[in-house]
Length: 160
Image 1 (cartoon, rainbow, N blue to C red):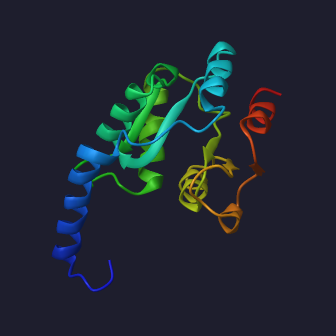
Image 2 (cartoon, rainbow, N blue to C red):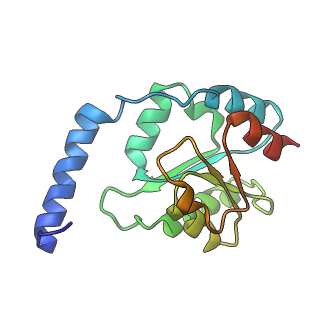
C-alpha cells in the first residue's frame, strides 16, 4: 500500500478484514446464472472446488449464506495468518484436498475472473477459462484458454 510502512500495511489489512467480516462479506449477490450452472455441473457429476484469495473462513461463510457451499467438494482460501495467501498456494491446497478426497484432478480447469487466477492455475499446469462477469478486465485474459461472456457459454465449454 502506497505511503504505508510494512507494519502500517499489515494493520490496514487487518482493519479491512475485520470491517469486511462484519459488514461486507454478505453484502453481495450471486452473479445471474451461477446457481443454475452449479446445479447443472453437480447433476452431471462434475466435482467442484473453490480456490479463492479471500480468507477461507469468509469464503465458507459467504457460500453457506447463499446456499452454494453444497455444490463444492472443497472450499480452499487464504489462511487468516497469511501463511497461505498467494493464489498458487491456494490452488495447491485445493488440489491437495481434492486428491485426499480421492477426486481426480487430471482434467481440472480453473474458472476465474482475474489474472491471478490464470497465473495461480498455470503454476500447477491447469488451464483457465476467464469469465467476464467478475472483477477483472479484458487485459487479464492473457494465458487463459478461453474467455466467456455468460454462464451459458461456460456451461457449453464445461459440459460439452
